[in-house]
Length: 473
Image (cartoon, rainbow, N blue to C red; front, side, top):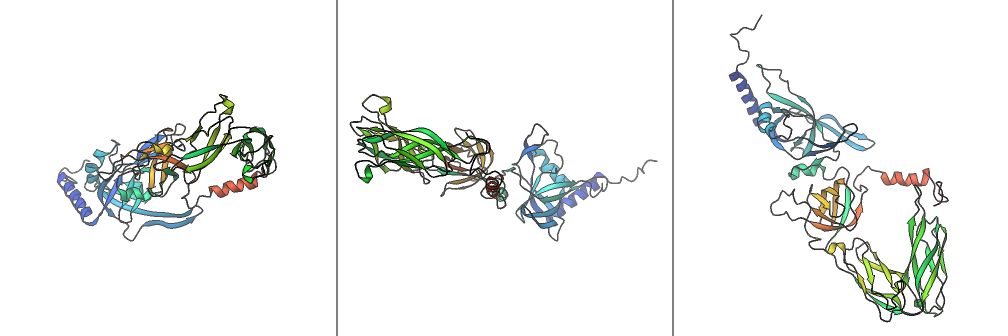
């Protein structure tokens, strides 16, 4: 039979009273937490696995902490990947407060209750917790209505999610975890300058006859001495190697020979000998110029903030022959200066010392080397169009730690900040710097053993020290 109509089993007034009492108790005995809804950025096309999630919104709400004796869970566990903390937290929040102050502003219009996978920032421990289960029927329909949500949470395990709430206390929780690549940036550049002189009876070109094989590093290049008898008259050069194309190859062949000193006083082409570095077979022949051969006299201004070797231009020979024109390349030091200029062709037939011009560093453009980056700011490479998010930035050392990479940054390219995530008014100046070096190996993961594994594989699994098992190229 039907219920007794004279007993309402929970009138709207009684339900309102219970909800008000719960809200008041939460405000009196609870703590403020930040609710952070998860936003999915994309899925894979095969099994629809979530690729990346983002947490940008945050809503402050009062919650009662049920585990009053401390965090639940298994505590700290020692695993093969290091110490894993498995703290658990149980929170109670008001159903009415959630529906009034969080649901209307959620990006997910169907999110009428807290969802598993969303995050909770717990200020007391400065920790992020992930909601694992939402109990929405406890107490079970008291007076015919539900009044609260019970959230069972576990300590958040970061997997390259984007956490960008513009609240530093929240965002810095993941600043030093996850995959981190490192960019060393160049500041305001300075163009290098050098001078030349002319010498006679000098080595003006070294032509590679056989590139050889099996070299583990650039071999030494020996050039027979000049009949002049002076040590400064002897020509010197260095070998440049290129890696063989064989799969897994760790040996090299000679790509070219660059002249560091053309010498003088030679009456016939000197002998070229390659030695050392474990390889063999490389051979080359030298050409000499009897008059007007170019020699690099001095680098009187090494410049600054070079990220990649600049173009070196030398004025043409008056002979009018293209083969008589001197050409050179620059070597950049670890400090971003020009350490050496090497001649690939010392030319001949010059009557006056030619003009040498070294291109400006890529960091020498307008506004480059200025500004600051902030955590979570999106940076973009102007040439590669690669993007990443800032983990941290040290202006003094110009070291930028980044994560969430999309694409590959190029050496020497200009990267710019978005200046869209600044939380402090007046800072929003977009930074512009040139990429000086790139380190894609994560240097900050305490437990990563990539280098150890790679070295063990190179030395123990396949041995390339004597021959290449995949053939000679």
